[in-house]
Image (cartoon, rainbow, N blue to C red):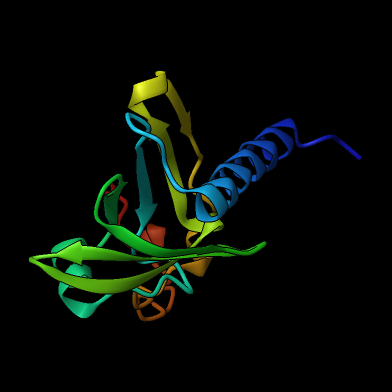
Length: 142
C-alpha cells in the first residue's frame, strides 16, 4: 500500500490549526496576533447564517482578532460567534472545510488542498443518459 504523503501532511497541518484554536479558546489572543481563516462555505456541516451563504456561496475568509466570542473547538470543527454589521452570529466550520489559515503578525500561513467535492452541499447535476451514435452513418459514402 502506497503512503499518501499529501494526506499525512495535511492532517498534521489541520492538527496544528486545531491546537492553535484550542489554545486561543482557552487563553484568548494577545495583540498583535490575529487569524485569517478561509473555508469552503458549501462543504457539508458548515453552518453559517443564510445571508453569508448567499454572499459567499463557495468560499469565505473570517478574521479572529477583536470582535469574536465563544470560540469552541472539538476534533471535527470549531465554532465562533462573529460580529457582522454590529450583531453576533454563530459560525460552525469543520476542519475539513478549511482551505487556508494564517497569522500575519507571525508571518505564518498554511494552505490546504480542498477535499473531494462529494461532501459539498451544492445540488448535483441530473444524471445524463448516454447516447449511442452510429459512426457509419456519419462517414462519407463513396
